[in-house]
Length: 302
Ligand code: GLN
Image 1 (cartoon, protein in one colour):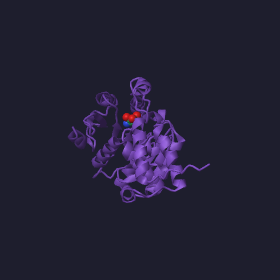
Image 2 (spheres, protein in one colour):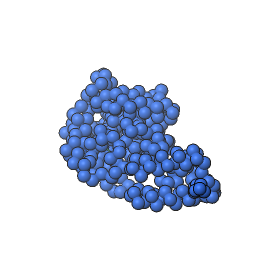
Image 3 (cartoon, rainbow, N blue to C red):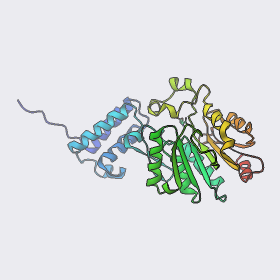
């Protein structure tokens, strides 16, 4: 009997096939994802795919790519398959213990860095640091600052510190496994407290989230019945850990801006600003006490 000839999978052929397969599976950007995964397998830039369209894949490359494609078709986020995600100007390691950093969060980092530009901030605390995207980026942008990266998930703290190390700020960053403030020594005070806590209302997680997002750690997404649990808990403890001149910065979910600002005001952080993201949705809340060194800048954000 004649042996059946194996099909030759060239770059162009496999990209076409995968694009269609991903599209059928509901992947939002099928061609782009197919290319990014293939670049990782072939250790090349996207431009090289186009230059080598007719090049056949080796068996081991094909095997690795098939494994990636199966994962992506099963809604695994691209960043988890690759193990990293670009944020600000750096690549951050991400794992299943960490949320995948979002472009909206880059806005939060930019605003906090801007508010602190001429302030020489001392200590910055990131509550719920995940991959460390926020605190590590801030330490890169604010060379006098020292940071504390806190997460309840030990795997997240480990990843945040690995990112601090690989991005050159580990000597100014301390990782701590803690449920919010609970493990922080009571005599430490911070000039800046920043957080992108879990803020999605519990019911929405069951109902309406994209399949990719459901692969991310539930503990990093679920903010309780109204999505406000973590803001309430953080703000209840805030005055024990914020310097009198300090500022807080939060990322918030849709429709939560004014509610979080009200929670800040209830703790005497009465100067507040609610700012929008690229989609014009309230996404950030900044707050400080009256008369603090941040007052004018925060008022100017409105
Ligand atoms: N931004 C994330 C999302 O919309 C949620 C992050 C969070 O809860 N902090 O999927």
